[in-house]
Length: 234
Image (cartoon, rainbow, N blue to C red; front, side):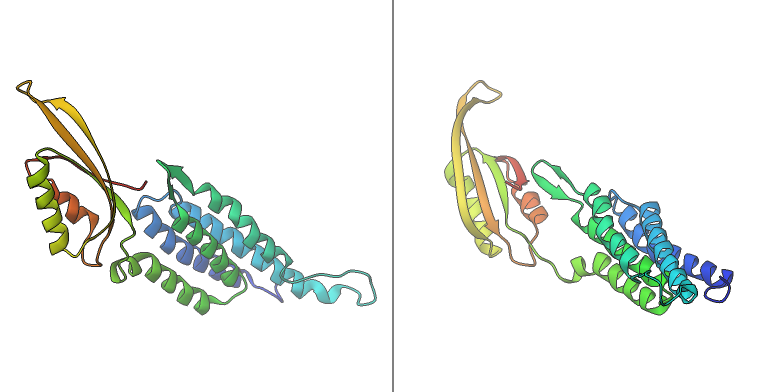
């Protein structure tokens, strides 16, 4: 045992595993994701243990008689970690209000398992470099590269002519493209029991990179004729 891996080496690998797994887990926990620091550390530790086990098996393979019928594959256990982590990753993915969430956390769990294997095999600096790259993707890319997906904005308003002019003028000024509009009209009574028409437009929009859906909701809600503004995924 001491010839292939010392207790000091095992301790160093375990500490490195906790560092790289915990760094990514803290970022996920900070954003209140389903799998946090402890989950990422445990996944990384488990993968590292499998990797070290394979190192021990390889080191002790010299004691096997070459003429025997025994065969072994160095990466068989590691392959089971990579495929098995999908079960845990699937548990972090959920659907709420027809919206899929947790995909990034599932991907980070899979990457943490790979980092654990890398540390377990003793490739510390590569693991640290990959950890930095993963953290960069998780924390910086969304701020640097901004992608506005196509969403729908529901606007409920009164006084159709003047309010539509207000909405269309704003969209044109912000270079917001209207891809489609669904609408319906309903009758309601105001506080003075006067019957009025209430209009609801469901806009499918494509936004320029400098404009967010928060800006749209904030601006449109300032108009007194607009009763409700909200974004919808479907």
